[in-house]
Length: 354
Image (cartoon, rainbow, N blue to C red; front, side):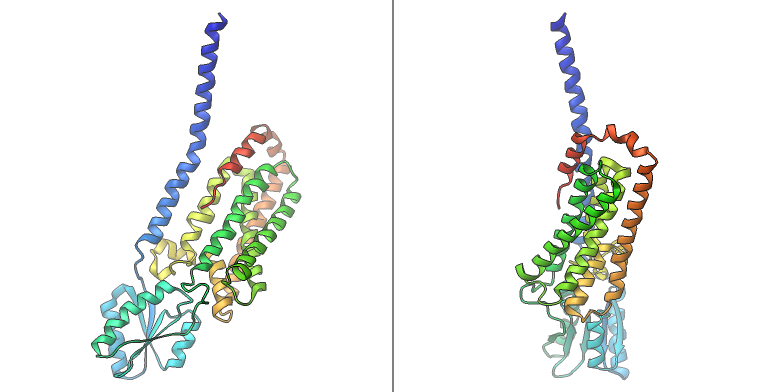
């Protein structure tokens, strides 16, 4: 009789283990699908859309040239005229233009600010190089905001974003999962402490290690701390409600939608409307654009990017308060048996990087 029961028990155990594995495969498969959709739709086929450019000068010829560019460029270009070269430089340093063309019969010139976006600078050069050729003169390109030699494409800030993001959302699985038995006030202190460490790592990478930032390291640290603290606070608060699905939520919020809309590789005018719209208020965009502002553009526009990061941190504070209130009502205590050490360990293992 026992020999009959053993195969049946073994089959039941195997069936249960298989269901367990299949359930846990849902998260990585959804990550695969989500990242593929997000990255490919955001990065594979950049198309210019309302790229802001200017023609420098006044008078009928300037107006005709600007109108011709607008007609030929269609939706790809947003063409305006500016009075002189100095005004064009100021607009470029304020990141209000991607390029400014200075017509000249002997020496036509294109002003760019490649520190704002190397890809945008290349895009406007493709527009104005043929125009200069039609005038029978080579195009002189003047860069008014050049990235540091250690980061010639200016894309190092995007990869700094990736590093700090990983430190933030991967730590959520530990603080929210393994630390789930701790009082919320202690988890909030862990959020502050871990985000401080992550920000110091990011600042070290940006400064003495890879020399992306040759100055303003205090500002780099402050932006990194605000950014990391927002991610950790939101993730730790959401963990109370989402449990094992929190990892997937972190991937969606701070990888799939975040990296793609940050402007670290392509500015909004080279992306589709969805990611361009996210760029206006997503935290990764606030981080990258804030760093650009500090490092290359004399902190112009920094206030708006700071407010973006503060707003996300405020959302995180609300999430922590909501989670604390939920737990005080005893609902988490009732759910604790379903979230034992094994489940917390599995969640931490699922919290994979990019």
